[in-house]
Image 1 (cartoon, rainbow, N blue to C red):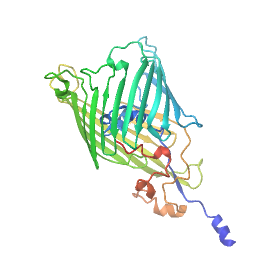
Image 2: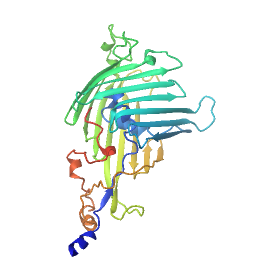
Image 3: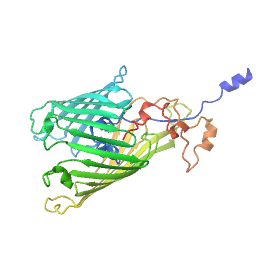
Length: 385
């Protein structure tokens, strides 16, 4: 009996909070299957989110509402309102909404959504079907209601793709224009261990010797080196070099860091001794190489750099070279039973896991790539390019 009483009085093991990401899947990742895999490589997907999400032009505002019904995890609704802070007659307030349904609540790659807006296109339908077992997918973007249809793209875009952990290729086409605009784009990407290389055909310029594919300005190529599983719990980095349109050289770098810090929060249980933070940093340097830059009044080079710090489940700080933004977001935190420290008594955790200069231990399953017991917000999005 004495043994039972003593064991019942033992304090619970210490825990480190693991807050989920602000939005899952990330806003940029929700549309990754509608784009060329080439456009999403070399950290471009993460860099675009880092440079653009939650930032606004000077004297402008934007508000985002994300609604997810508890009873049905397959659907959600995003509504945004944006516009100028001053009453300029040439600018108006724009409102839009996006209703999304995806087949698997944990997989953002097969979905259908409807986009309505106060500007063109008034009603836009997008759909994507991806079959992981075979690696093939099909997607389409169709403007259902639009005031003016000027180009072939205003009638819709269709595409086919293949994706695996080491190879991706695909093409897009315009159903109502199969002449010189066929295909609208095409790509081929391959990955060997940590090295990724790809090429993309994007016919935006005129023909050469009777064909657009003979014009080197319509071809882009890139190479990248990266490490990481794609899970927010795993640190990762990506470095890329791209030669674009025979006139632009782009160098980019993106790094995701997972940091655990000790914190005492009076609103949490006593066994909570720390919290996990997500830190992201990225830059992109574009240098022009063509001789026409002076006549076109185009800058020789542009440089973007930004960083974000998700301090806890409610606060994120984002800073860029052009400005800064502080954002607040509230939601339910992840399952408190999921811990990143090995279960130990608190006095032992003080001496083992919080040594100065030593990174706290992660769960062995996470390190080995097993994410079955991890909340869905913290799992990799999929082992495809």
